[in-house]
Image (cartoon, rainbow, N blue to C red):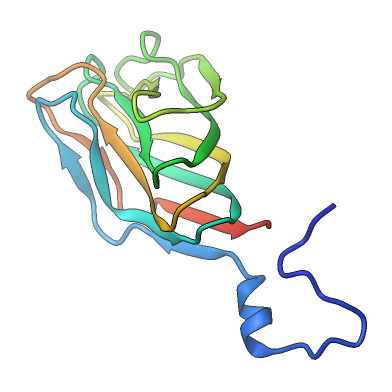
Length: 173
């Protein structure tokens, strides 16, 4: 099993090495909304710099504001060229959730995701909902790993990712 950073016997433990072993934690500080658009857009907060030649795991907990249950939400990624991404998500079913009701939960996974790969989940018109995304990315060129999202079906009622949503990114190799 590989670890990052790799410590050797007798090696001096440095502050920089210890910091490198900690996950990066990003919290969304304000609500963000998309109205009448199915075009993926980069989230204003949930993104992080990634290094060339590195492998990272990530987890996101996304709190979705009540909106139009016909609009729902879809998620994808923007990542550096040549990167390999596998991700999965759990959230409300896109067609089964209605005003303030408990609906079935769906789980999806995508291997070798591309810019066109998206996962869609339901939102409620009467209550906030939740989506969890997680995965692993191997980066070949440095850049940004950015969450992309939009309405699954364009509606005039805003689809919102709420403040307090978060992303944790941990380098593994």
